[in-house]
Image (tube, rainbow, N blue to C red; front, side, top):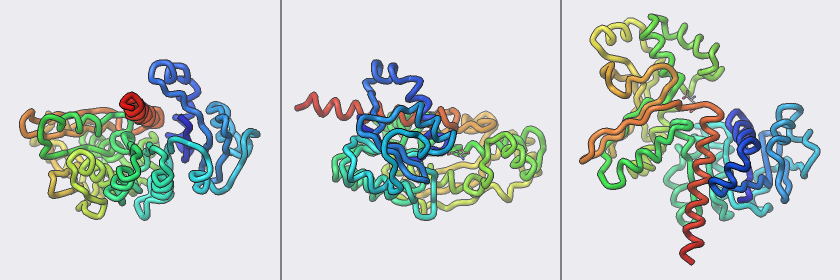
Length: 341
Ligand code: HSE
C-alpha cells in the first residue's frame, strides 16, 4: 500500500512511531506493508516514491521540522501532491475544524476524486459533509473509513454496525467526549466547581488549551453526527444537531443528582429522527455513567436489546491504532475484490 500521510500532530506522530516499531508484525500478520510516499504537515510535505522511513520522519518532525529530514523532495503544496503521486491511500490526521472542515475536507475530496482509499481521524469535514463524501466515495468505488473519529481507539462504529447487522437499531446514546466526562465526574466525586475541574483537566493534559469544542458540546455533536449517519443511516450533518454544553452546570446540580442516585453526563443522542447533545442524568449504575476520561456508547436494538461499549475515547497511540484497524479493513476489501476476479 502506497500511502500519503497528512497531519503530524499527536495522532500522526503516534502512527509514525507505530509504523516503525510494528513494521514486521503489520506486514506478516495483517499484510500491511505500508510505503509512505509522502508525509505532510502544515508547513509542507516530503515525498519519496520508494518510501520514507517512519522513524526518521518522526525524528525530523521533532527536531527541526520535515525540511530537516534530508531525504526525499520537499514541496509546500501538499494538496497538489494527491493528483501527482502514485498512491493507493490517503491517511488524514489533520486537526478537526468545524467551521469549514478544512484542510481535511479538501484532502479527502481530492483523494476520492483521484481514486485513493481514505482513512481519516479528523471529524470536521466528515461531520459537515458526511452524506456528500460517502456518496462521492461510493460513486468512485473507493473505501472511506473513519473509525478513529468516534471513541479514539475504541471501535464504537464497528461495534454499532455489528449490533445492527441482524437487528434493527433504534437509538444511539453516547458519552463521546473524555474531557467533559472527566470534568463532570470530578465535580461529582470531589465537589469541585466546573472551573476548578476544567483547570485540573487542562493541567493533566485531558483538555485542550482551548477546550471550547469539548465543553460547548460541539466535539460530541461531530461524533454523534458521524454515528447517526454510519450506524442509523440518518443522512445528517452537524447543523442538524441541537447542542448545549456543560458550561452552565453547577456543582450543586451535580451533587443533588448524586444524592438521588443519578449522574450528570454530556450525552449525544440520535434516534433516527432527532439529533441532540445535552447534559442529562443517567442512573449511577447505568453503563453510560462512566468515570474520568472514558467514553461509552449504548446501541439500542429492537430485538437484541441494548449493547454498550466502553473505553478510552482519545489518545495518540489509541487513535493511531484505529488508523491501522481501518487499513486492515481496506486491505480486506481489496483482497476480496482480487479473489473475485
Ligand atoms: N477532545 C476529545 C475528548 C478527544 O476530550 O474526548 C478527541 O476526540
